[in-house]
Image 1: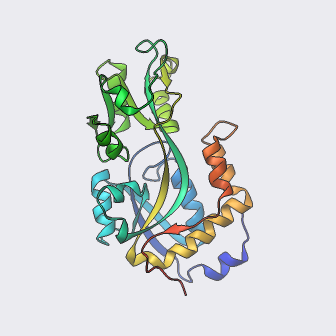
Image 2 (image 1 turned 60 degrees about the vertical axis):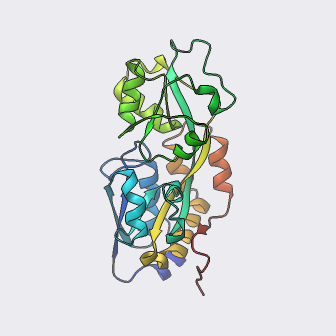
Length: 264
């Protein structure tokens, strides 16, 4: 589909294999058995490089230490998982996508809408969230103790049952799970107009795969320049795309990692 000369020059002569750890978080992340946004971008990137990529779901808290210790090739998820454990020095990461975190709630619980200026304003409410999630430092600074569960479905179910007042999730992830669990009752839910945080979703590579970083950068930039990246993203977001995604598409692709990173 792409017919890019640089890809032919940089692709591995023998098909290389790489396994990425991830979490089950539709429609963003999964084990590759269904269509998820980040997996689809990852597949397109590694296809350009003639690299076979597979995915395995792990507990979120285990991923950071496993990649940082070089026992796993890499991960598809968030670099925030590594910053939480002060392991960012041990990995390289390329941003694939920007995401906005919001609060979801039942309309009948907050008929006037959920209004707050700071997270501290929500101290009287119960908030569901994921174990090991990127927002945990933010909640800690606000002196909030969220109800932590294993997966997003549990968060939705607890709010629906009235056991929690709200849950925090990525915008499209929250809506997708609500539609899956309660397809005829989606309108009972609402999302806060105020986002909690805009975060990046990343391809994270262990140090043993550092040679792939510049190649992944070029492949992702090629997808963006060809318009294929936008086509993929538009399958998951309604038109028009949120500003934070348009802004990402307009930025040059670059990676982050060790200060000693050099490709010369």
